[in-house]
Structures are given as structure tokens and as C-alpha cells.
Image 1 (spheres, rainbow, N blue to C red):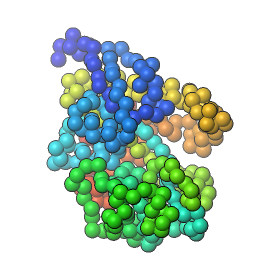
Image 2 (tube, helix red, strand yellow):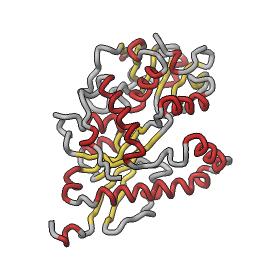
Image 3 (cartoon, rainbow, N blue to C red):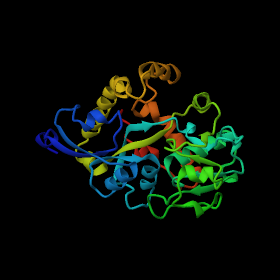
Length: 319
């Protein structure tokens, strides 16, 4: 590569969902020298993942689970992408729900129960199965009730688990209220909570205790870049990382302002969150997140989602 080509401006097509940490990027409020970019906002992570796979984006937000599966050796996209240490995170363990009159309390109470999940292999389901096991319950002791088909065809469904596919197409809250399932898990709460409650009777303390006990703040999404592009322009890895890191910093500065209409005490709540989790709890970077990523990949292998994960091959570790 010549010096002139190495410094030529590059035009990037970026796909992402809309969050406070991506809004500055979407608005074009962040920049790095020599990079011009166009952001397309997708309605869901499913849409963004599939459009990135289809080649519509040079860099796109993936579900972490789908990214791991896509990169599995032998697959059609195995060497097409590389993940940058740019992540979305959530305290996934809190997002488990049951009927308000049920006597269950936390993941430890799920043995033998029927658990509804949007898709069997969503990232949140892998995390919840890890937390269920950490609470002393064998994830194979429950019956898994997917409400939808997995976003990619050909997913494995290991014999170690019990499945009931009869609830596909039904709504989250309805299957809990009807008693068709005992619990619903995901990475966000249902819009309709009538007659439902959090599985943990004290969900805030339980979520923080799970972080303390496991050392895990779950990653849910990852930014993947076409490997060919980075081979042509190795400097782009740092440039793209910088764009998203700037956007995250802007979002962090403005989160209280942007949410004040609905969360009038947001600034103080943010202080409480930092006191509990540390100011860098949602930060990017490989070293900060390596332990969590390795834990997720190990869980994905143990649960039968993938046969093996070469994590050092599929993630850029320069930041």
C-alpha cells in the first residue's frame, strides 16, 4: 500500500440501533481525521445484524451471540468480520419476570419451571442460563419455551435441554399471565407488566449482587467490521473505535439531560450507579471487557451453541 492510499479519505457505511450512546454518532457530532461516514439506524438489533451480514454496512452492530455463531469455524461468514471492543451492556440478570402472585424469588427458584424466551439463542438467554447455573440450578432442569424462531436458520438445539415450541407467536406477558410459562427472560422488561413482577423480589439488590458474585457485567451487542476493510486500512480499527468512544462520552455527559422528562432524578441515579458499578462500568476496550467476553464464549460452548470459539481471532485487541 502506498503512502497516498494509506492516507486517502475513507467512506464508511455504519449500521446501528439508536441509543443515548449512539445518538451523537447518528447526528454526525463526532469525527476522526480522514474518515467520512454515513449512519443508518435500524429498528432492531435483528435488522442491523442481518443487514450487516448481507453487506449493507462496512461496520455494523451485532447481537453478541449471533456474532459468535457467525464467526464459528467452517461457516460461510467465518472470516468475514472482526469485532472491535465497542459494546452495548446491560445488567441482564434483572430482566426475568413471573406472575405477581407467584412465590418464586430469583434464578435459584427456577428448577423445574417453564421459561419463555424471545428466541432460544438470543444473547440474553445464554447469559441467563449462565446465571441460572451460577445460582445452583441446572439449566437442563427447566423447559425452554421460545416465543419466536431464531434469527438465523440452522441453529443447534442440543439434547441436553428440554424444549416446548407450542408458544411460538404468543406474547411475553400473555404466556405468563395464562400460566403457560412460569417465567419470561430477556434483556428488557415487557411493555405490559399488569399482573407480573420481577422474578427477584428485590431486583436492584439482586442485580448488583449478581455482578459482585460473578464479576460479570454482560455484553449484549458488539460492533463488527468487515475484515477485508481492515486488512486494506489497518488504521481504520482505531478510527472507528474513536468515533464510537467519542459518541459514548457525549452520551455519558448528556444522559441526565436527555432523560429528565421521564427520570427527573436521573443525574443522582447516575451517581448511584457509578458508586455501585464504577465510573467505567459501560466503557469500551479489550482489557476492560476481556474477562466477560471469555465467560460468554465459554458459556456458548458449554450450552452447545458453538463447538469452539477462537476469541483471539475474532476480536481486535488493540484498544
